[in-house]
Amino acid sequence: MSHPWHGWCLLRPGLLLYGGTVGTNEPHAHHAVQLIVAAEPFTMADAQGERLTTRIAVIPPDTGHTVLSGARGALLALLDPRSSPGRSLLARCGTGPRASSWSPSPVQTGELPDHGSSLIEAGPLSLRPEHCGGMRPLMFAEPQTGHARSAEAASALRVVEAWSGHGGAGDVLLHPAVEAAIAVIPTLLRRGPVRLRAVADAVHLSPSRLAHLFSAHVGIPMRPYVRWLRLRRAIGRVAAGETLTAAAHSAGFTDGPHFTRAFRRTFGNAPSELAAAIDWLL
Image 1 (cartoon, rainbow, N blue to C red):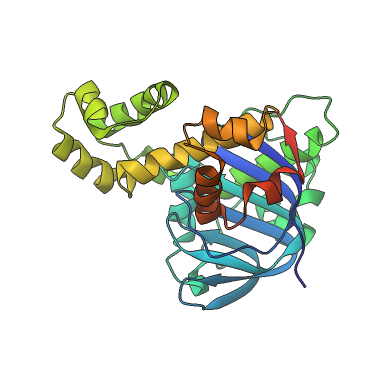
Image 2 (image 1 turned 135 degrees about the vertical axis):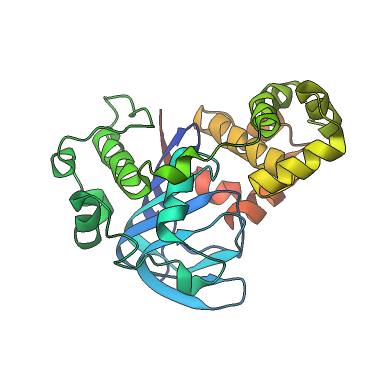
């Protein structure tokens, strides 16, 4: 049985966190590490059509996948793969491009705190702060109090941190020029189109050298990375109350259809399908 997407969403630097019902979608790939934990089984497929039915899945970045059968009571996190929690989650779960590798084994999750392991039995959204031993999120700011879903979102943040942790994988340093490029791209993005030469000039490298280093360290070329940042910016503008068209222009997309195509390739749904069903938290 499939379910429509319906729930709440929280944006933080390096994290897009969704809680609620996970529905079906089209084949897609995004530049993020994806963690899905649900209170009931859901079915996914990889780019070759291999299927996996599970309650917990970790999908590596830039990996084609689709949800064939959704689930209620789900938590879905998209983590920047260059962030400390994103790297740690990948290193801990050791996932690959095939669906058979996306469900972490007990050996892989053996180092998880007790509340992370009990999540498998309890379901993500039943977790309350007292089940986390008083642990507060270490990397992500909690949502503002007063929203009807604030406590639920705060608990979900703790779940993400319990799964990702902060192991040695997060301490791997980027090349200084790539780190500088990642820092300068958001500033250029606010001004308009981001050109490789402009970024290269800002970090004092030739365009060809920066392009090589960027692909090697980030995992994708700069152009799709910039598109990912534009999508995140557009989502943030929608969360702030802008229409889809206004958000698309704010993020640098030429028009609404351009934004819709990029969104569908990245998330497997049209933005209009999700925007109307999401309760945004700040």
